[in-house]
Length: 195
Image 1 (tube, rainbow, N blue to C red):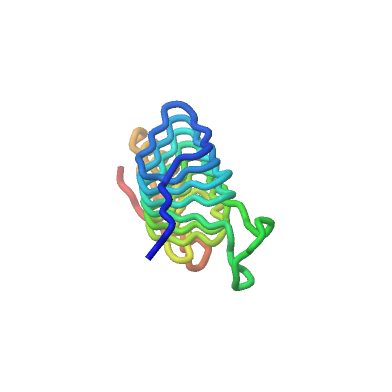
Image 2 (spheres, rainbow, N blue to C red):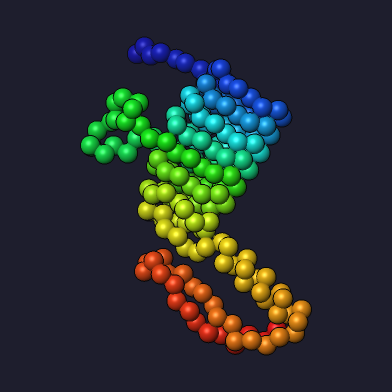
């Protein structure tokens, strides 16, 4: 049986300074900024832009119209798509394809699938998640479809308050905010905390 054999390659890539690429990879007509790491068996296609200090782990696929910000981590086997197949068939023309924008400081766990969406700065996407809608709040998201598990800013604020209370040797009734992603709302629960 005859077949066409083609080798993986790096073609027409604009590299920044101090980049590391572990072959084999397919990289073509994309932009890779300074200090980026790209693991083996990665494919990055035409027009993709990767920001400074980002890491793309093995077996990941980044298709056209994907932009990754600075200081991002893309886990093993993460797949991006630019077509939602809204009509039950391939989009055909590029005019039907959509963009994905991943802002700075985003972490995406292994085997996540990212549809054409916007992901805000500092978000964390859990392993195996399927992101179908824009991520607008800095938090931890997981599941299929990915849902907000908890906000990240809230826990930093609580730690700051607890440290201040401890320094001042205060004993307060503290209100703990817990986010219920099912209801999409928040509930308050009072707790006595001795510091």
